[in-house]
Length: 553
Image (cartoon, rainbow, N blue to C red; front, side, top):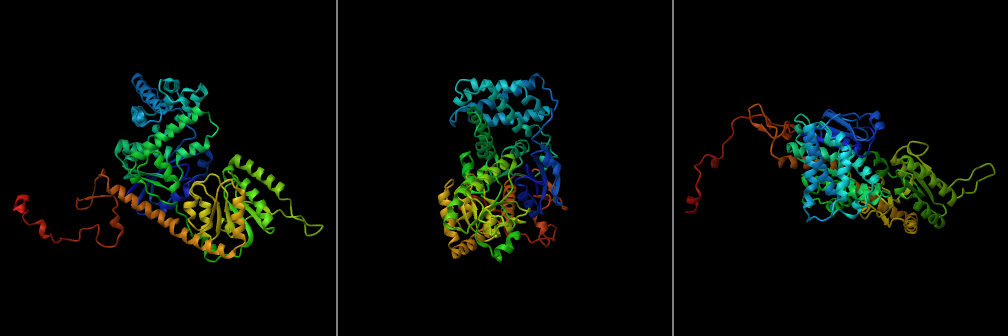
């Protein structure tokens, strides 16, 4: 089977979210062929290059969404009229009230596919989406009677912001991927995220009838709400309508939708996903690096708590530090190791704030002598630096792993702690409860007192820690391994293609059609792909058929 793998900011680049599980998926399905179509997230990512690609990756095509040059396409009068109509319909759909009974319900999808067809006919939409025509069409839609209140209140800066965002989000429409020898040549498209990564799959389905499935470990509409909290109401409303409309159209056309957890699944259902298409596929993690710690638990300091992850405000380390102040009062020997790197400039500033807070809350312990320096019970470390070499070493260093986030998708760090056989205390956010099950303690977010109480209860009960850690490791090995992830997608690929009419007729050496270019039976020992000789014909196939009338008599 030939699969078009669509990624955004991940595989095949060296760094990027989602790149690791895609790499494991491609390596695990070596009996299929992969064409990778990737969007890069920045110049630094492109400079870093690609990961080593296995031989089943036959083609890689990339495109940047962070920067684009003017394509030089100049529309004629008829093309300009088509653009005004389709873009105007798209803008009207964004400004319409949230009422599925209105005629505007299908307007978004019609406008989107109309713009895609225009881009394919004329060679691109870059200049048109940046033009004054687009901004004026958006302004007319916002001022039209019946537009939602937030849209009517949009000012010129708001309109320019929304138009710029739409231009960036619709850049995939102008690519040259939609040809017979491009995405038209694959048997199946797999979009590894929503939004921009799903648009090419949507267009391949529209132009060639290629089936596709969408995997989301983080729903794009939820990401929009989290990343634009300070935007003006008009901007938030219009962009939420766009991402919601794109998600609904993607879910409607997809053969299967594979959320990474129940939390993402609920978001998808709210965005219009059909429950019959939903298949939860948990992220696959390689348990091998954690086997040594999990199967032969190292002697960890029974008084040490460990936090591992990216340092950013969403992780709420401030609440963790305040909770540790109460833990320290109850258990004076306890220590807290915060292990992780800051995430961007915002994360670096937040790390500095946390260091200052720790120094204020926990003055250094008294020195052992006149020539010694007191040690602070809270330490900030980085993997691979002076601290632990790997995440397995980090989790092994403590008796309890803590997660204090206020926003979380699927808690990968928590699963790593489970694979290490560590007891965990975490906040009830995202898919934490789904991942933990009954193998750890869960407390409300932004509640330092509850977090402290749970940690103290585990620090004082080593037998309970041991029982929870063993149960956590067993759960992680059952649900969150690479093998179960790869097997789930392999089954979905076969089921999707089996339900789709054959587009590319491939014949074997006898002239009989094959369902795939490389049938799955070719990998099974035996005479499955060659003619073994004459076969016995069943009796029912040669006897004279009996008519319905004769049967009735």
